[in-house]
Each structure stands twice: as C-alpha cells, then as structure tokens.
Image 1: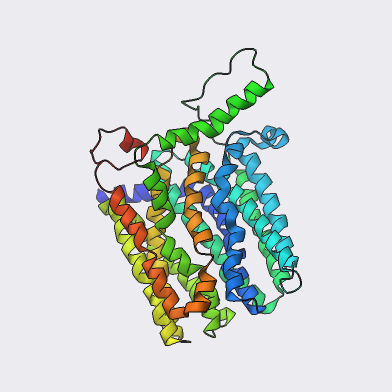
Image 2 (image 1 turned 90 degrees about the horizontal axis):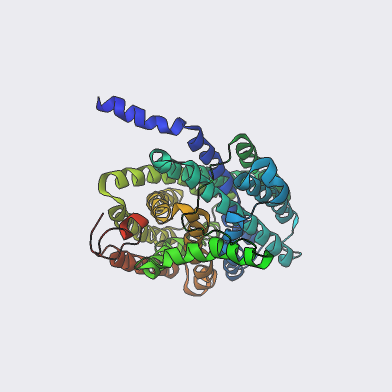
Length: 443
C-alpha cells in the first residue's frame, strides 16, 4: 500500500508541466557560467588579474536589480507577441532571442584587445538572462498547483544545474579543442532548448489580482498609467512590506548564502592557479560537482519532507559554512586531484541541499497575485550577495592569500545563521500563510 502510494507520488515528475519547467530551468541556468566561472577562466588564461576578475562579477548586476523592471514584464502585454503567444510566452521568446545574440557577441569580443567590449556583452547576457528568469519564475508558479509545486521547484533547480553543467564543463571541453568565440557561439545555440519548450507549452491561466482596483470611467491616459503603476509596482511591494519582519527576511535572503557565494566566485581561478587544467576543472569541478549537487538537492528535498523547512535551512546553513573550510584544505594540499574531488564534493553537496531549501523558502514567500514581481524582488536580494558583496573577492585573495581568504569566507556565513535564528523565533514569520495566523503561532 505504501509502495503504491510512493510510486503514484513519483509520477508527478512525468507531468508535462514539470517537464516543461525542467527544460526552462536548463535555459535559465545556461547563461550563468558564461558570465561567471567559464568567463573567469578565459580571463585568467588571458592573464587578467584576480582583482579585475573579481570586479567583473559586477556585470551580473541585472540579477540583483531585476525587480526594478519585473513589474513591466509581469503586467505589460507585448503588442505582437502577446497576440501570437500570450503574455508569459511572448516575453519568454523576446528575452531568449536577445540572450542568443548577446552570447554570440560576448564570444566575439576579445578581452585582451578590448576588455570594455567584453564587459558590455557580458552585461547584456546578464540582462537578458535576468529578464528571462523573471518570466520563468512567474510561469513556474502559475502553471503549478499545490500537488506539483514541490516537484516544479525541484525540476527548475535540476534543469538549472544541467544548464550550468553544459556552459561550465561543456564549454571548457569545447575551449580545449576550439576557440573561445566558437565555444560561445555553440553555447548560444543551446538557448534553443528553452525556445522550443516554450513554443510547445501552453500559456498559463490568467490569475485575477485580488487587490486590483477598477479603472474609473472616463479616465485619461495619464490616469490609466498611474493606475497601472499602482497595480503592477506599488501593490506587490506594499503587500510584502505589510508583513511583520519583512526587513529581516530581505536581509536573510541576502546573507544566507553569502559565504558560499564569496568562495564560489573565485573557485575557478583558484583551481587554475593551483595548476589544474581545463579538463581537470571540467571533470571534477563541473561534472563530478554537478552530480554532488544533484545528490544534495535530493537530500535537501527529503530533509524538508522529514523535518520541515526551517530546520532544513538550519542544517544546510551549517553545512555550507563547514564546506568553505575544504577550500583552505585544498590550498594547503596544492595540485592534488584526490583532495580536489573531496573539496568539490563537499562544497556542492552542501550547496545543493541549501539551494533546494532556499528556493522552496523564496517560493513560499510569494503572494500568487504578484508572483513575478515578488519573486524577482526576493531573488534579486539573494543575487546581491553573490554579485556586489563577493566582487571584492579577487582583491582579498590577492592580498590575503588563498588560505586566509577561504577562512574569511567561512566567517562570512555566520550573519546568515544569526538572521535565521531571528526568523525562527515566534512571531517573526512572514510567509503569507503564517501572517494570517495569530501572532506567536507556529505553522
């Protein structure tokens, strides 16, 4: 009886909606390494300094600021594409086409001849990628019901990691045998996975905005615009900040994975400086590391089912803190492939567990009426730590040394745990279903 129930529950992963989310997750994850670890290795290979590589992480700023234009994507209907594909699918196609063109441009830019052009196209890749993420996050939440929401969250992360694997390990394999511009051109073609998926999928049903106010009769164009701003921008933000403890939540979202991000932004240049080849990094850091991440995602989902969301966040937070110490061990060991396997395995296992819990937490904070705007706001604050706070990582590594740098990243994980302690105290919950409960009542 129990076996049949488990098998029936597992069938949710055959749901066409979940499969579509898996492929869209691939399209979402693909650009990240192209402006992150893959680009940093290319720049290091060209002799660019660690400080410059660290600062170049700021080209990913659109991920941190995407909540600014999320209301436009959330509410605005594109003139032609909306009629042909619908609101969500129309925006998806537009961002994917822009993404393909900007990836090709990034590959054609030569960082030794014009670092400015490289920065420009890397910024455009990040902009179109962040815009695509806004639509995908809203699309995922809107097409899933209560039964498929958890599977959808798992599918988006699995697809995302596969996309990162292709643009990480896949790009490094290609760059070993072909030029970097050809490598990036081939990566741009992989965006077609998302294009085909969204063309084969249905537009989600329109959700009525429970706080939307009717437009008065006889209103002029200015009145209509002000009315739209209220519904698209002001209402989603005021709904969120009306919850108790909302500021603590935003700080927690920023700092929960801060130590992990600070270490991760310099991991590939670190491995390169230790003498590991592109093939070594691809095999161990990317392929093996992705497998460890998948295991971590599965364990994270199991932990949430067994012990609850907040307890899982605690467990994963401490594991992420401890995993940063392995990089210091790697610095002491030097060019030792077996130690590299342990370092990468521990870091990705802990990171995968933390990501599964964190994505579920962010999703649970969204009001269904404002999914795109609110999820973009939350994920933008998460990206802030990864981008702005971690950009001095190169300067710190050059001036402190690798061992001291990774010890510092371990300390950087502590603020997130302190904020989690504040959130788990009674009366400090801010998820929509928790806000509706009497103060001091745990879910």
